[in-house]
Length: 201
Image (cartoon, rainbow, N blue to C red; front, side, top):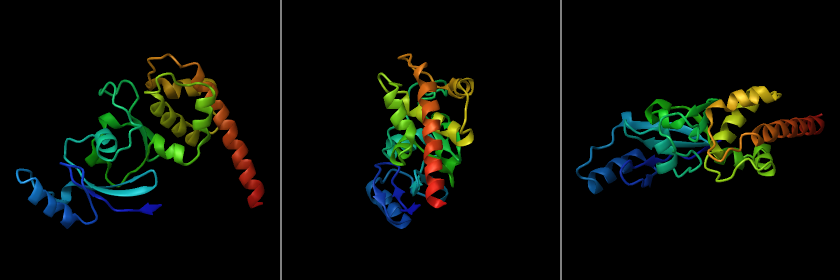
């Protein structure tokens, strides 16, 4: 895990190495703004990288990830927790980042679709192979939900997959393709695990 502490200005998104630099910057450049206080600092591990950021009380996790840290996979579609396009994995569970306050996520470990892709997870390959997207807007939410499912249940049935994806909506209607991709990814994961066991053995 990389430990790269970052102190993010909540007003202009400038990044600093030390909290005192952030505080001095806010006081000098944003004179009408409130000075940052330690209570507004949170630490998150996102896709294996540690971030220390200054957040405002009303910021959602989606706003922090997407608009402040530049992780564009968690989308904002309904902003009501009804579509699943903002789904990320937190502490192993899929959550709706539009309904989660950033300040409540202090100390948590989060994985987005970027992290899943960077790790070379077979879901990315199988989602492409089975054409699980048209416009692609909802796809990261499906992928993160599917990854959380496979982490918890490496051998899901089609019915279990459909149930797990029940909170993810797709305007393009690609629903029949998702179970195919997830079942194939599950098989690829088992093959990868067998190969690793053979090497270790």
